[in-house]
Length: 189
Image (tube, rainbow, N blue to C red; front, side, top):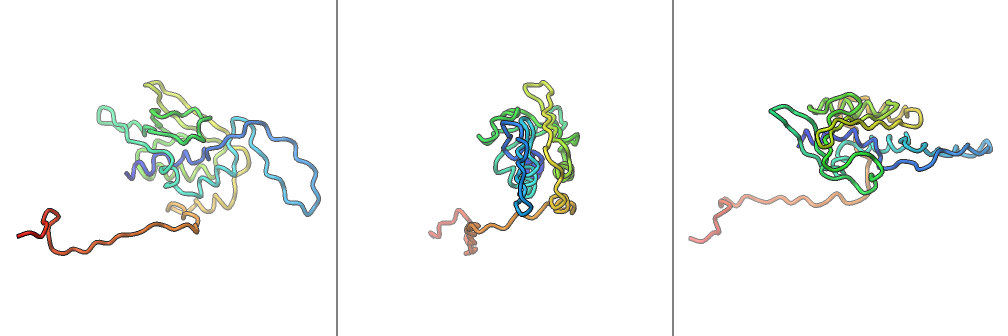
């Protein structure tokens, strides 16, 4: 599971969105107006979407993209994508594809994936090497916009980023007491 946790986190940079049209020229604004967010040109990822996905942390991607390890002849090959979210239908990756590298990094060990994940904070593009039906392919998507110093700083540590605080309930923890009986013991003599 740890390998799966790390395998496709770098895909979080996909953010699930691509702009359909090039950005329009910004309109002149008054000195007190906030700058407008520029849309990414077609085929590019918006830096804000990449940053938002990176700051969600690796578990975010695994909730959206289930994977399984692929081993051939005893050697690690990559991570097979079992499903993709519907809002990612515009990217080239499809269920059944086997991701072998992200930005040149093989994702075999947890450290490999976290290194690729952190590197996306300052990368100018997202490159995913993958196999489809035994044929090697590559998906390259430029990242539109300069790296965010805040995101780069948040990902500089050697540990995964903290997930943003949420106000939603986190669930229920059930703690069972051991009554001394074995699980198959129904208590009857």
